[in-house]
Amino acid sequence: MPWLQRQLRLPEFPRGFHLVTDHVVDSLPELARVQVGLLHVFIQHTSASITINENADSDVPLDLESSFDHLAPERFPYRHTVEGPDDMPAHVKAAMLGSSVCVPIADGRLCLGTWQGIYLCEHRNRGGARKLVLTLQGEWLPPA
Image 1 (tube, helix red, strand yellow):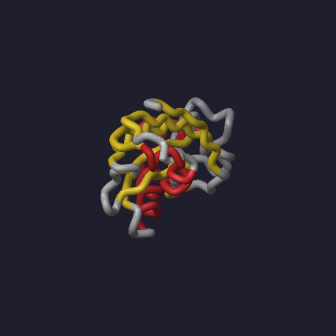
Image 2 (image 1 turned 120 degrees about the vertical axis):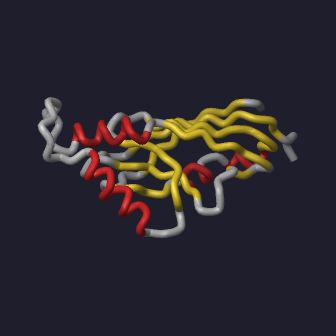
């Protein structure tokens, strides 16, 4: 089986940067059978994003959030304001960070660095549950 695609519905998270690596891995038990491959993670939203960053220090997600709030403040003369003051800044932040990441796989494991994790970047105050599309491709070990 060279390809597998699955949708993952994440729980609702508050505004901020949230590690979701375990959610992703737990939703793909087939990952253990991939000898070498790639995992593409795509978020199906325009006011949240996905990124890879440090997963060890709890100050990192807080600093990321405050940095992006500085770069795309709510108090800016945006034209698109019909969905509330946090909506357009959320689109700007999502455009800066992007809607997908691609992670190599070796011997059934994501090849993330020691201090790396996959983050859901929730840019809205109440963004709701978010959906990811996970696409797994690679050389699979035969079934045991």
